[in-house]
Image 1: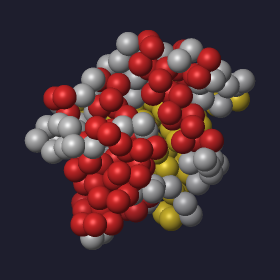
Image 2: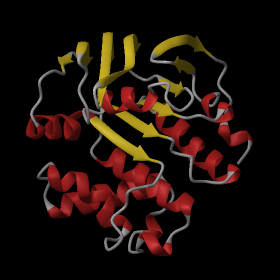
Image 3: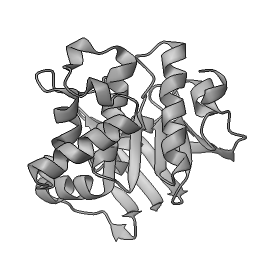
Length: 233
């Protein structure tokens, strides 16, 4: 599903250059649930931005579902993101003046899906995350955990090839974090490919594999015995 070879990325810092990714080799098979861990400055956010086509590597190869991702203008990058990827962020990134259903339906609008079909799919995915009865509520009327569930429903509504979750539990308390991870595990159980960026070891061990980044290189890539979040919910 994801194939990355010899990926390098640097940023200009005045007259200097900061080498953030230093030859990353990384692959993810369809249906995997992978945690990417690393301290601040390890390169995990840069890697996620490249995977999400929000940034581009200086050199190296990136293939997503056998499609080469290279030299994309903003329009093509946006089209590929809509086609391939769903995003979940720490800060939820919901639109405050839109209801839960409208937020979930938004990616479908950009895919030019008709209004009735958008609503049907939005309700379907809100039901999947346990929030169908909250469809008409604004984000200000939802708890942090409910907002993240809406964000996950929005990410899933376009039926992406890969779900990218950037610190999805970072703004939540422990109990709510485990509820969100339980939902992510259920989505993965259905065959969806998911990458979770986290700095929390307990969250990482709720995935099936942990990739450890340090100073721009993969320090360790290990399969782990998955801890089921439902045991803590």
